[in-house]
Length: 273
Image (cartoon, rainbow, N blue to C red; front, side, top):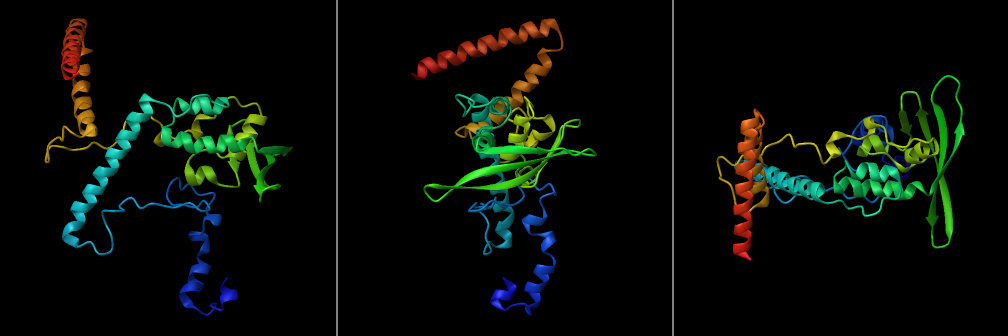
């Protein structure tokens, strides 16, 4: 591109080219950068602070806008967590890998993983045995070109059965944090019934408690906001559980109190109806 456009003497462009191994995704596939930046073709990256901060935001408004953006994203994540715990976006899993992760992944991540599962069936592999290291698989992925034509592309996948380690040249796991279609093809062909635990990141699990806590002490709890209600009730019920589990007598008292609360809640719901 530099030669084509005749800009080889441009100092800044030349510096970018010399440092390409530090920023170009093709050179960073072995570095773990899960979710750091977009690299897929035609993928649109949305800023975390879009709609809150821009280049014209005054300094005196920056901290308030920054805090508003964080709270808004925390609320969206909390609502997504609640949705993932209460429902699953998979009705009928196509393979055990999909069934396994439907119990663990959030719905958003599960939808992304479903794309790889679907594409896994367009892949086939051949094995090249290596006597002194991992086995190399050549995985060919077929895809449509035009309306009636098909083409294929080959990907190298290294698989170490003894350590349950697998690596694909496409680098999807390092960029996105979930296994690609090529690795799934190799695991399936090798008779691996489950995805190894080291490739199921805790950040995508729906059973992991969020490390951040929304602080409503200053602004008060907005009872119209379901996230605020959930966070406040969850914090209080955890205190009840900690007290109730300490002895059999406290356990019985806690159950009686919870039963009374549920009965009152049912009356409130009946009254509202």
